[in-house]
Image (cartoon, rainbow over all chains, first blue to last red; front, side):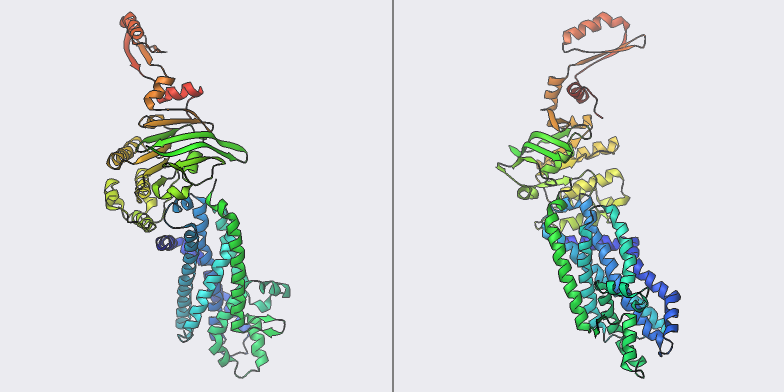
Length: 290
Length: 277
């Protein structure tokens, strides 16, 4: 299985344009933010001090979620490509078992997700450190790394489910475009969730993206939030968190980080179960192309 | 010794009967050709033998007992029609990652040498020429030292020199290791090297024998006469005395003549009434 994972990783990273395009969603959010999103938000929260320092980690949080979604999808696409050509049949002639082959796609996608999130994290963190003097706190890194692994896991499962329905290599590009665009909105990066209509907000709460972003932002912004809002009542802080998608509200209850993680894990479990079920049914179909 | 047998294999697709009740016997060490026009069911047959698709009915016997692909996947190597190697990876990565997917130890050095891969070792697979690609394809299929190698249309799209070169290597390999090879082709001349030929058309085996046997059964010798007037006539006749008689009679009128056995082309023509497409 190691040989196969090595192959899968090589294929992902040797395709430079593929790597670039799998980061497209993330890069768009980053660039949009630099060009005008930040300006909009800074002016609408002008009463809060150090808005820039507050918004930089806010953007990082959302962008990491997008990165997790799009890069795991891109890596997992290899599964469909192999299925579409005779590669899967060819691989099944080796000593790697069918289960091993499938697991290697999943593990590769997770590793790709982790590596690309780390790259984006340090890239954006480094940029904001230079441009805005935003601190890159190393103390929270272990927590961040934990979330990176969790996001890789949930989005690999999600994309596995999504790709279970894809038979044609042709469809992959279209799915990539849709997911890349949708993820920016669902993660609440292009537009803060508070600015969207209530029905859309409700819908977003049924996807794991929102919770994923919320945990990231909670951890990344924690120190700066306490600084910026120390002279404000808690209700202002909570409304800021709510509007900016730093915490998710169920009814009147604000979810904690642990609860967010639990929600994500439950999503992951349910999604994996559905994906596995579909897999069991489609196994024959997958192996025998004709 | 019988290595692989297919008995009454049938493959039905929803709207087409692709393979209709065919039986094959592949003997150890033989070079066996499945010859037929496009759409004859050659690839479908091959796919059933290598486990890519399940036969609708019929069975496969490997060695001396009924077998599923799991029982003999360790013993076979396959070169697919459209290459399945990773285009962006180098030859080295394609070969080495494959080698790591086997638990047994594999012989690489001799393969690299035999297929002359040193010079292209570090090039991306997609940058290779058609012939180089085929060499890598075949070398990779042989990594696990299989007993039986399947080649699906191994020389389609290759020029004649490359084709010859590839068959040289394969023949050498057969001599050295006793490798059994089954290949599909629609090149008649290619099938002439085979020890045994199955001719397929419309999902059925319409004839099978050695090349000589097929020629004897389904063709007559051909006498071609080129006249001084520029005219050319071709007659089929199986009698050399008759031929000599005709030649003597027309000796003064001829510029040239040819007397040859029927080709696989003629075999196919006589069997189906049409030329291979």
